[in-house]
Length: 375
Image 1 (tube, rainbow, N blue to C red):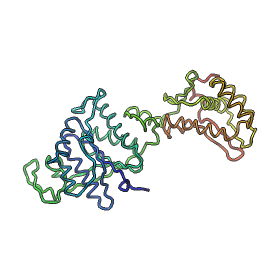
Image 2 (image 1 turned 180 degrees about the vertical axis):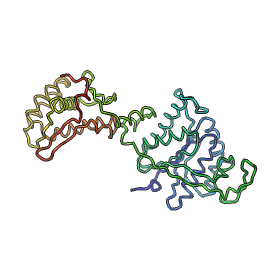
Image 3 (image 1 turned 90 degrees about the horizontal axis):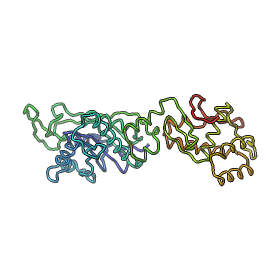
Image 4 (image 1 turned 45 degrees about the vertical axis):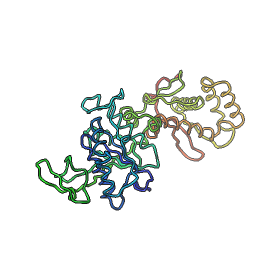
């Protein structure tokens, strides 16, 4: 499998508070101390509060004194895209930058903001993301780590950096320097930045990405909504059939389908759940004709005349073939996966049992898990 440092696009994402040093410390740990597999970013993104972002731009990116530029010169790193546009100040729901994160409302805004950034940066399959949770308030690190657990791929990594005790949190320490340089600790004792140690602590995390629906992977991602949908995999499945809107609700999440697929899944529920009669499949043409009448009785209520005639013509020619049934099952599965994600969709998708000539299909729910079905 391709390793993170082998990706053409490599992204470092970090959070910071009033100490932007965390970024250069992390950069040193992943690009310098990891000698066998250095992760040298092609771009860097930093999330902070409005004041933290201001300090990061001044202390890291100032044209003359910026510590990021100095770091790159010291360790001969080129081609890293990092500028003030890649420094994000967390915003509330009204788009106003937050100076700090102290209230429940601010925490909710920070969670949504951080989750959206992670969602965006993990959409490119040709990029590897390294996330550092070493800086900022504890809640910021928590949200960032949780967001990576939700959206992270196999090539993404999560880490924390450990700094030599005497150097940790010092305003003048940004990274171990190549040349000897004296700074002072809080007690005015001199320290040599050349002798500091920065160690990378990689943090294992559970990847839940396959449990997310398509609209969250490709669209705007709020923390609370994402968590709620991810939890669908851990609850008892409940399906509501909305006959007026011709759709289903899986644990309150709407699942839209075309007319033929809606009718097919509804028909499968009536056949295999209400009547407890698994659907048998045959690969031979003109078989399964005994199912056609009961299916068309349902489909007629939810299709146009042209749609109905098209399906009738196909049935007259070939019957309800095994291939037709397989196509419907695949389409139903994709609809549930788009709405719920792969993991939660498994609770509702049509299952198979038996093999070869004894193969049959059924909906893996019971009558108590299904509501609003017209008898």
